[in-house]
Amino acid sequence: MPESLTRRELYDLVWSKPVAKVAEDLGISGAAVKKICDKHRVSVPGRGYWAKLAAGQKVKPAAFREISDPLLNRIQIRGSLLRSLPEEVLAAREKARSAASISEPTNHPTIQALPEGAQLPDLVARLKRKLDAAKPDHNGLLRVSGRKLLSCAIAPASIPRVLFILSELIGQGESKAFKFVAGEQSLNTSVDGEIIDLELVEGTEKVRHQASEKEIAALERWEADKERAQRRGQWFSDWDKPKIPEWDWAPNSRLALSFDKGWHSDGLRRKFGDGSKQRIEPLIPEILIALATCAAAKKAKREADQRRKEDWARQEERRREAERRQALEAKRWEFLERQIELAEQASRIEAYLASYVSSHPVDELPPSCQKLIGWADGYAKRLRAAISPQKLEAALGHHSLMDEAAQIAAWTKFD
Image (cartoon, rainbow, N blue to C red; front, side, top):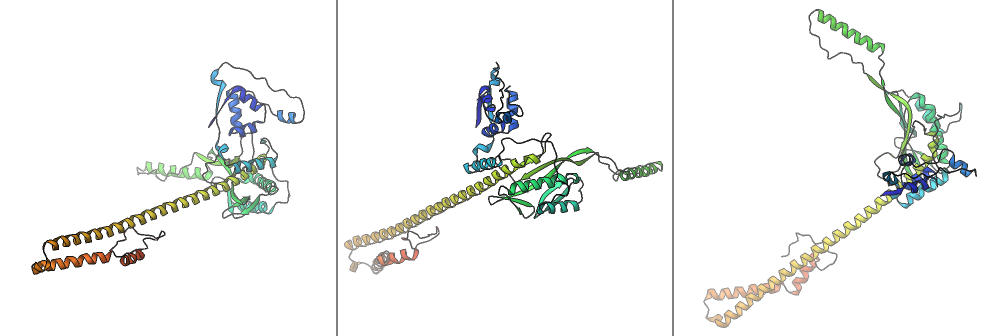
């Protein structure tokens, strides 16, 4: 649901706590909070304000200024799906954030690398050997993957950064009970028993193609062949003309770490990348928080799916049981109606015979009429025998018709 605020309420929020906390409360990003403040002319604390305040220094908030535009005084904020997450996921997120002891992400443009000759963790050393042996593809990227390898697609120049990022991720993660385990196709992380895949990819951008000497020579030979053919009056096709592309794709040095690939509807962040004023390295604490939150969400979703599956199974069982009882009742009625039909038929025959014989003694009837009366009497007796307790008991027992747990098929027929 949209969050409705006045300018004054928004001002009080951003001057009462860091923007990251305000963003978390509203279910949006810190950048979105700052954009909303700019749009509605609400001042925000400058860099260092909260650090000075925490250090006990005197800081003065910017004054709130009223404006006359009513459209700017009313603010509608459409939050993300974060606030609709299960309580256990929000609790895991808050626990991870408290353990990280950070209030706002640190945006830092400095690119970092491991010191020369540093002792590399086994997983990092394994990745380095694989990257050093790999050859760039047509986009200039080294692509590596494997059960104990961080899945990568990076330029050779980015190897030092990637090794540093993985080292920091492992070091900081293991100190918070994260485990890094072999997956089917790449290195995964295990958080509270939940396995999450990892991938680090460098972006590419379109750059103008620089024709090589070989490409230029091939085009010149083709054009010379065409010119000779035209001088001789010969037909010459352009279908095999060497084509020199106008653009290439090249690495742009911007890395992006993503995890838990696939479609998700929970609104959780699963990708962290370089920006114009941001690098992945200082965001590792935030990445670990996101990993812990995603692990909790993954567990909650699996449990919710299991509950839905069990609920569906119970509903299906109740439906089948209702159908079984309905079929059983229908067959009981069908059987009873058959007995009533036989009894009525026997009674009609008996009533007819009694009435007929009372008016026409059997001894006085012609032989054929006597035979009919005898046959009808025998038929009535057979009907009575068919609905006798002994016959009923045998038929009911054969079909288990009075057994409350009986499975009676719709096509069951009663003789």
